[in-house]
View 1 (cartoon, helix red, strand yellow):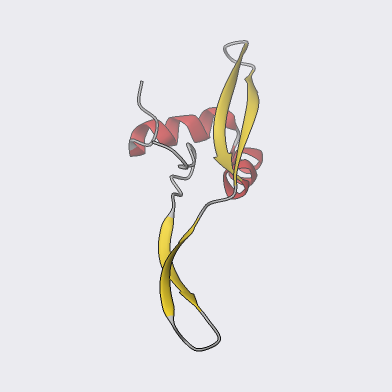
View 2 (cartoon, helix red, strand yellow):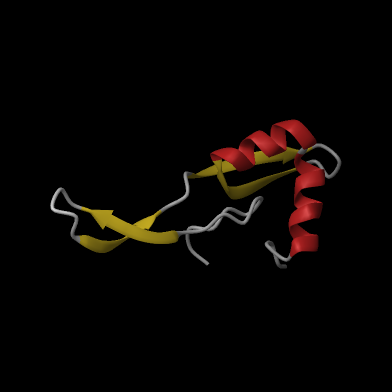
Length: 79
C-alpha cells in the first residue's frame, strides 16, 4: 500500500478543491510521510519505516517496540 503510515495507519483522504467561484472539484489530502530508519536495541537491528510526523512523535513517546507491537495487533504491518 502506498502512502500509508506504518505506525498510525494514516492514509490519503479525499475532499473538494473550492475555487473563488465556489466550483468544487475532487482533490486528495496526503499524509506527511517520511522514510526513516529506527534502531531496535532489543534485537540489535535497524528497521526502515514509512511514518508520518505524528507517527514519529508516537515513537518518541512510547518507544519503537511498543509502537511496532501495536501496529501488528491492529493489522497495519503484516509480515
